[in-house]
Amino acid sequence: MPNTISALEARLYPHRDSLLGIFSAFVILTLWTGSLVWLLPADLSGVPIWGLGAIFLVRMFLHTGLFITAHDAMHGTICPSLPRLNRPIGSLTIGAYALLPYQVLCEKHRLHHHYPATDRDPDFSRKYQHNAVLWFVAFMVKNMKYRRSWLQMLAMTVLFHSMWAVLHFPIANVFVVWSLPMLASTVQMFYFGVFLPHREPKGGYTDRHRAQSSYYSTFWSFLTCYHFGYHWEHHEYPHLPWYKLPSVVK
Image 1 (cartoon, rainbow, N blue to C red):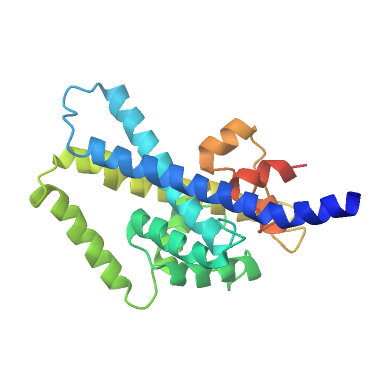
Image 2: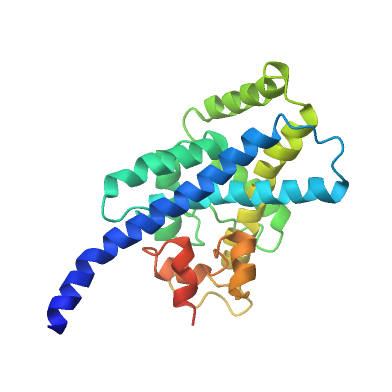
């Protein structure tokens, strides 16, 4: 009987995880889309500074969620029981994030996992190990170098101008609700998911992952970057989606 239960559980786990993964992606995408549609045309002139700050932070957090969802799709963890669904979900969320090409990011992220914190890692900068600002600049330049990257930048420019010049959304709303949260989320993910985990510690790297974790509480780990501060754990267990990383923290 125990063997029968184990076999049944082994068959059910991928389907359960797929439901959780799809539900997570749906919630993040729905909240991101709903808040965008609601806030872009809204009259925010009477909202106090702290309220605008709250809107900015929530939108930044949801924007980060789009990238994290696409990242999980790259690892096949959104829908493990139906692997073919990961690509369209990842393409949708990374497209909503910044019109980025999903396949290009897959290839770059594969290099990051195969050659972490080396010269072959597109996220790494040996030269600017302890300068987060210069490393971020190098990170952006390196990751935006791909075939036809100019098309993405042109499309984002057209989209930005269309929001206020064609759709007539208030320019302040475009900045507070869309463009600035998008840029801030990039900084957020770089700092908590690249710079802190992969800068070389004083004693040097100690294992093949060449990564370390920021062991915040589960609550703060979620708020800072969807648990990607648990970065050694992500490299050790790449098959786990973001919401399961706390379960393997020692």
